[in-house]
Amino acid sequence: MAQATVVNAGQVVKKQRKRKNQYRKYAPLLIMMIPGLLYMLINNYLPMLGIVIAFKDVNFAKGILQSDWVGFANFEYLFKTTDAYIITRNTILYNLVFIILGTVLSLAAAILLNEIKSKVLVKAYQSIITLPHLISMVIVGYLGFAFLSPDTGFLNKTVLPWLGIEEGISWYTENKYWPWILTLVHFWKAIGYSSIVYFAALLGIDEEYYEAARLDGATRWQQIRHITLPIIVPVITMLTLLNIGRIFYSDFGLFYQVPMNSGALFESTSTIDTYVFRGLMGSGDIGMSTAAGVYQSIVGFILVIVANLVVRRANKDNALF
Image (cartoon, rainbow, N blue to C red; front, side, top):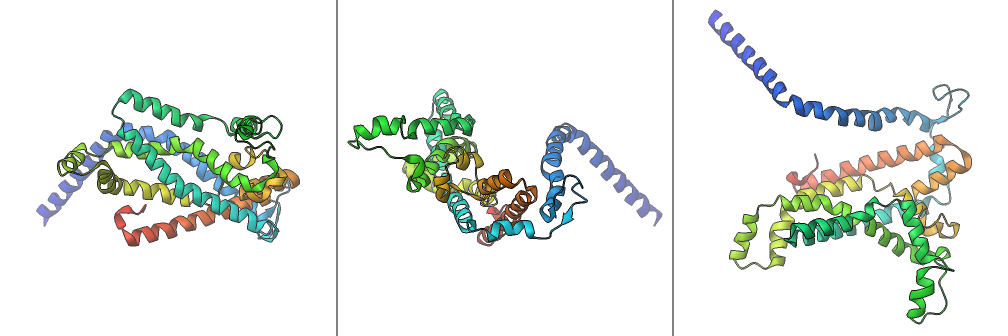
């Protein structure tokens, strides 16, 4: 009995030493994690305490904690307004197009980059298609105005007359053009950046797969279809699930700056984010804007959980968690 106790004590000591050695081994990585964890704590978790504002009539004289509770009154602003259907429809439909078509275009860009064998050309092309992502949306809005201005715009003064259309188009008062314009601007700005992850995944594919396929007589398209796409399906699934979680959010700069906040275009350009911002600027009610943020976060969380369950039932290996 005493001998068994000594053996167990020895095993415990060995485990403790092993843990200490592991901590020492990974200490540099743990130290490197600290800035990221602090940023996540300060930027993502501490602000969650502000959820209480969504249920209060904030009075800065009383302070946030002492302000009166109003229950779900702040949420009624979003659901009882006559524009609730328009802003919800625009937010969801635009994001669906951005997710579906954006995934296809990003994959296509990454595959095309992967087909280029010259490292110099790859870096050059990658820099060119990523450059628009670095341009401020305010600048993009004014670049768009330089093209679409009714009086001095490049399209009205140069392109349309060249096509035989003498009468210019009032771009900032015609709703029918803006779903196409906003979609085009979004992809012009986002495709290069969003293709980086897919391109990195493609670089991780073993070249021996392609060599074996070429020996079997597979065409380039067959190699992409049967090797490239199946291998990066987990990456595609992960990014799609993350994007689904933000389907009730919108790119504020895209929908506010590019249309120049034109009231005539609200039917096709107004989203939840821009609508709440206008309401906040008009009334100064931060409780209402906080309620909108809480609503978007909760719905996004539910959508991610549901979408992940669907993916998990189809293929456990492709699920996010």
